[in-house]
Length: 223
Image (cartoon, rainbow, N blue to C red):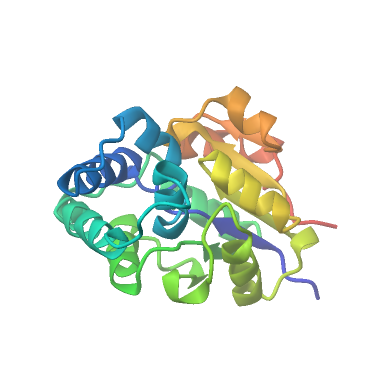
């Protein structure tokens, strides 16, 4: 029997963390005398740190401070952990998809320690069958590695999976892996942008996706 997998991005999709990451990266960059407008930083959220710094600072820069900037981001972001909050309907959405027969896999590039914090905040481990972390990928979104890793954990083929994400980088990564993407606007990207990158459908947030579940790609398992 084929396995049908619903692969969920975590930051900005299930948990309200996008702007916490944006602020943490902005401040980390500022600490190392890299002045990047906050709006540009926000538009890069959804990439992993390896891709984000190249995107914001250029590939041919001096990389000497990269590790320190990333560590500063991680420390600043960790200060927000006690306040991490799921987006409306996030846990209920996972449970509703599981009840329809989807295998639920979290597709995250967070560290193992951070992922544990995110999962505690989400409080849906009763239906989460597996999760990726930074240790599972060589390159982060928009590279497809994370989606491939999530598919492998699920034991599913791309044709039997759906990816749910909140950024254009999610849509791009899913597309490169051959997996259709359901997008939510909670990461700050508009429906027009997400559809323009190839999203199959777009919803305001997880609550709206849950309310519309019977009318979209997650309504029923692939034939």
